[in-house]
Image 1 (spheres, one colour):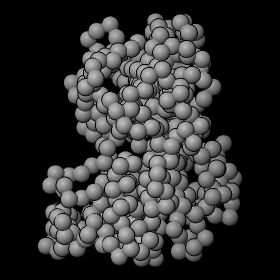
Image 2 (cartoon, one colour):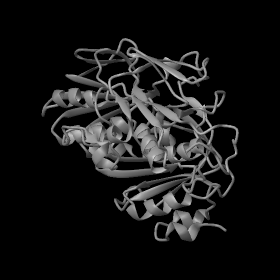
Image 3 (cartoon, one colour):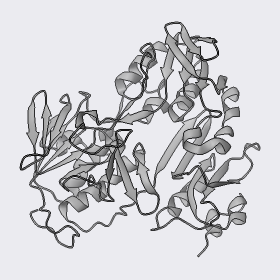
Image 4 (cartoon, rainbow, N blue to C red):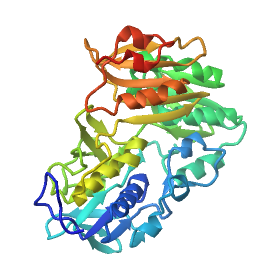
Length: 420
């Protein structure tokens, strides 16, 4: 493929070779997308973990019942090792140079260059300074280490009641581990869902045999547990820091403009803003411009799965039949409940509940933009019949508009609440 047709960037030539930095889901889907679109040029992949691509969600959701990684070859049917011309799984990138004729990535094994480079180096777990005694959970090696430490009767303290903390708490408690979760905010999942909806998940902890401590700030992590700001010690044999993840982009310092959290702003086709269009970023490292949702942070599994389709189509100048604006999507199995979040909640949104969270029949929450009928996000909890409808609502060009009263009624299908 050497020419671009029907493209808004006709002066950008189709690359003859592509360098993909990273070997996770976003990288695998990028390479698979290139081949599916007929790209017959050279594809080289640089990975940093030293093992074949695997799926990350099972690391927490199935921490104790899946003792080996869930390989992407089996999970999504894409074999990175077979699709790429070269795969260097133990060759992490050290720096990026854009001063030459081609983008060049420096590694300990020497430089790699190509007509186009796709940055898909993912994220890494945050562990604050002086928390060396705490474990983290983001890689297969992390999961193996944590799994070995958790036996029945072990005292586990999890710092953070976010997605990962809640998932690990549930599976550990079910296996006979004594679990305490310490959360600095006033409720679980506040960063993702806000206080109103986050508080609704608090009773799940006690029901699952987990002690939840909210509004508590950890100031020290030691071999015997965690020290709190009020002087209390929460004893532990194992401490897990589940306080978030940060895009793995420190190696790009000085080469590309980065946000405070390390992410890279990209346009709708994952071209890095402020860089040549031969430089793309996808997956956890990307802060994507969305006509529907505004700036969408990475870290969404669905974005890593489906985002590369738009990237590849634009890079090759092929008209894309796949919607480019992938809606943010998070799914979670935690403390005996199934959650699916579509869209991007905002702190000033107005929350409308659908169903009664106390009746055990499942419920949903809808985030309406302040003073409007537009819905920016929908969370379903134990309501599988609403999952498909919620997903479909975020496939149009703009945010869906719903009748609040009809959306509030759990007995009415969500599609009946849509305003035309």
